[in-house]
Length: 195
Image 1 (cartoon, rainbow, N blue to C red):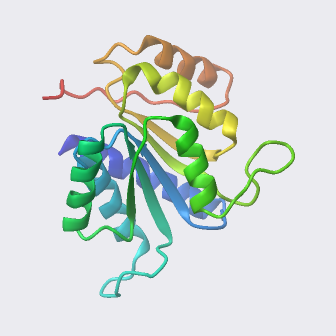
Image 2: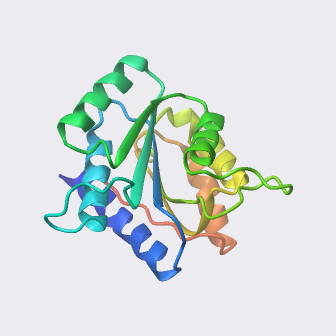
C-alpha cells in the first residue's frame, strides 16, 4: 500500500536522523488525525520493527512511541481497539483531542518535561516525526504552533497528507517559502486520489 510505504520511508528517515544526531530520550512520533487507526498501526508497527529486538518481549518502557490525536471520540475509541488488536499498546497512545495545545501539553507531561523560563521545552522531549492527517484547515496553524512550542528539532520529519488533493495552498506556500529560506527541505509525493 502506497500510503503505508510513504509513512514507513519518512519514519525511517526520521529515525536515522534521531540516531545520527544522537538525540537523547525516546523517539517521539505524533499523528494528528487518527480516524480508524490505519496510519497509527502502520507507524506503530514500523516503530516496533525498528526499535525492538527480534523475539524479545515488548519493552516495559518502549524506546519509541506514537501519540495519535483524534477529534472524534467514537473514532478514537475504535482506533484504540484496533491498535490493541494489532498488539501495539506499548508503542501507540491514542488520545481524543482536536486542540494543538493538548498535543503540546501531552508530549511535555507524558515525556516528563516542563517549560523552562524561555518558554520552550526543557530536556530532550522533541518530536522526531509529525504526521498531519486531520482537519485540512488546521494544517498550517497546528504546524506553526508545534514549531513555536519548540517540540520540533533539527532533522524532524513532517508528513502532510492530501495537501494537493485538498488544495491546502497556504500550507504548501508556507513550507515552500521556508525551504527557500533554507530552514527546511520539502518533497511532494503525488499519489492517486484517495478512496
